[in-house]
Every structure is written in structure tokens, then in C-alpha cells.
Amino acid sequence: MGKKALVTGASRGIGRAIAEELASQGYDLYLTCLHSMASLTGYAEELGKKYGSFCQAFQGDMGNPEDVERLFSSIRSLDALVNNAGISYIGLLQDMTPEEWNRVLSTNLTSCFLTCRQAIPLMLHAGGGRILNISSVWGAVGASTEAAYSASKGAVNSLTKALAKELAPSNIQVNALACGVIDTDMNRCFTPEEMQALMEEIPAGRLGTPKEAAALAGQILNAPDYMTGQIITLDGGWI
Figure 1 (cartoon, rainbow, N blue to C red):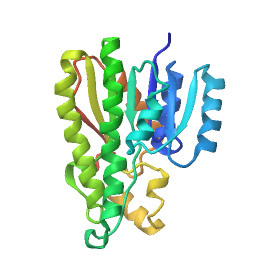
Figure 2: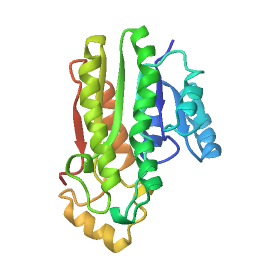
Figure 3: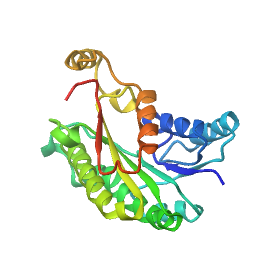
Figure 4: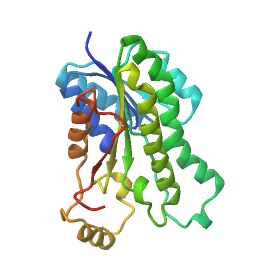
């Protein structure tokens, strides 16, 4: 049987690129989205034809326990879990509603808890596994007008380190990839002028690409077993 991986938030951006990277490595895939089921289903079929992988699309909210349980009801084994589902909120904290705060924390943080909770027993049964949480540089240093997003990613980093210690005796490695500014739809909210100013702050002089993030994610998932509990940064020298 081939290796199996779950990638959440795989309909676009980094998650979409990671899905192709893992398919190219021979993984069978479970891919999730919240809204774009038609697009994700087509992409799963495309990857299956291109790489000969089994690719199944699933629509659901990874911050919702019932949706995650429904997803895992069809997963019998899992070698790798990539927690990529995420949303941002840009605005002053005082203008944010409790519902908006909870939505960011649910999508970015609670989703990691729920998927890990379901995946760990499968990995324990198999004698090992890999968990990769997609984080952000803002989880380490914080960003003005992105307090909820920064808080969620800081918590993801702490969860990564704590869970790595918990699962190391069971040969399950847990790491995080902390991205800088990657050229995805999440960053389309910035004006061209704002984006230009941002790129001038980055020593590499440009945005990262989803393909670069996916390539590094693939390397982390194939790293030596002794590498666990690490927050690995990809930001062009920015932070």
C-alpha cells in the first residue's frame, strides 16, 4: 500500500501546491476545502491522472468536530498530516467581533487539535507518522492589525513543540513551517503600493511562491526522524 497524506485547505495557495508535491512523491491524498468543492474535486482528479495517485476531495470545516469526524470515518490509515487550513483578519482588534475572533482561532488553531486528535491513533497503530503545521512568521513576532491571526499562529507553534515532545517516543514527528509573505489569494487584500512597500522590506526582494513552500514542506516530511518540534522559517530573510 502507498503512503497516505491528508492536506487541509488544499483548494488553493500553499495547500494546493503541497498536494501536488506529495502526489509527485507517490502519496495517496485526502484533500479538504471549506467552499470550493467543485474546484477541489477537479484538482483531485487532475492529480490522480497525472501522478497515478488516489486523491479524494472532502468539503468541511476543519474547525468543526463533526466535520472532522466525518472526514476521518473514511480514512483507515495515515502517514502524514498537513494542517494548512487557515484564514486571516486584518483590522484593529477593537473593531473585531467575538464571532470573527472565534472564527480565526477555530480555523487556524482548533482545526489542528481536531485533526491531530483523529490522526494520532492511526499513526500509533502504524508505528509512526509525520505531522506538519503550516504557520507564519507572525506567530513568532506578531503583526499590527493581525492580532487574532498572530495569536493563532503563535499557539500553533507552541502546540507543535508540545505535541512533538508528547509523540516523539511513538516515532511521530511534529514540525511547523512558518511562512513569510507568500504569493497567495490571502495576500490579495493589499494594494499594489502596499505590496511594493512590503517587498522592499524583504531582503530577497520578492514574495515567496506556493511552489517553494510546498517543496520545503515535502523536505520536512522526509526529514530524519530525529528532527521534531521545529519551527522552520521560509521568509526570504525578512524576519
